[in-house]
Image 1 (cartoon, one colour):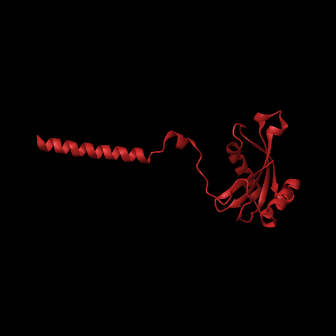
Image 2 (cartoon, one colour):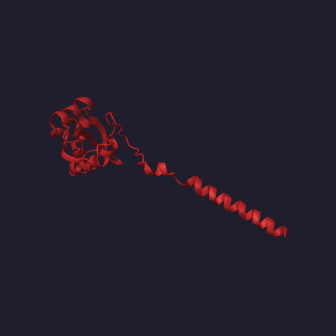
Image 3 (spheres, helix red, strand yellow):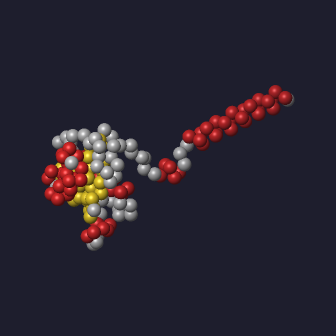
Length: 147
């Protein structure tokens, strides 16, 4: 009888410990619902410190990434549509803004993307946005929301 109690107690301790370890490493619902944090050299609102050179497909890849990041940058605006994307050198005044703000190297390694938020129409000011992206070792990232 004593052996059964000791065995039962030991089994209960093992099960309790196993359950606690599973709960300790399981993400809570609020953590699972949040987008993963991206570690990159791009800090929003600051000139990037080490952008990589842009390959030939950079404009398309940066436009895709801008569209993906837009709902997190502009909460409540709905999905974004890319209206225009170009290397900073071919982006007119917005491209010149990059050169003045961050210098020639960043200027040569930045893509300017114009976004449209159909949900915010007919408001011209709320339905349009411009973001600057560069390529890093982790991929393309928005580093500036132009105002």
